[in-house]
Length: 419
Image (cartoon, rainbow, N blue to C red):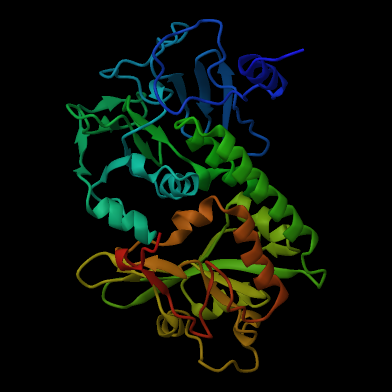
């Protein structure tokens, strides 16, 4: 039997696996009501603080942290009619419903975690502007934002939330009359074109990383987000399994409070967020869980913190002309009344040189990577915790700067952009 080349080609094609459907990378030209436009989907597994469901040409997201509802629909298809967006001029405060066509192609940044995620997903070319006061540590994002327009906020008429509450101004980003689609921000706003990214308020470590899935949904990048998250989750659990089995260390969080003239007025013990408590526990450390307290006498502070193995310092250094900067070791010596050399009776964390700050990666624009990549790279953060747990005076961490050993800040600027 003789086969024609056309027949052979058709036979071979029939033997190949069917092409795998994927989310659209742009707008579609026609609409099929029966089609699943998002074959690539994400699921929330941990305490992220948002949920997402899919139906036809739409994604329905509930951000329980900001108290908002987001409906994303495939560009080129009609907006869903089963939900109504909160009118732009609404007097409603909170619980807004907001609609947007995806994938995003030109957006505004006012969220450090969103900036980190956008780089992780490789969609930084979609950033078209930023809020005028928004700063990041990523050198390449700094370089990009420096060349882009800066957006201001508009303040509308005050409105009452409840009789018992004061008037609250309507705040929105001024993107009207432009081709900018929306703003990623850090909190819920009475703005139909802003979407809150709340990784810093997730209840657990891997829940923070799941905000990669959240941002990915706005770019139809669910497949990429799943791969990235699965790798973070696997590495996180591997680090957890290998965590030190030595006696658990107690970690405390505190700050000295200094006014602009240089006077130290008090010392405060702070309570860490739940994801910090969980992350420390996952490497066999425990966060100090006593009550938040302020001390007017440093010796009283020493008594309360004397048994801490590790101190995480949260202080800031006020500037005489306004604003603040990050402290150096000499500032901590003054702020806490430490001696440069530990003596008998010194706190345990001072004797073991285990005092840290989370500003090892910072920018000259007064941003720290604590608010950026640390918020979503849970595996790397857990590795930092593990290094602090397994050694005295760890110096090879990514985000935590050892203060007694005077590890220098890794200052980032646009000139550091490599790729």
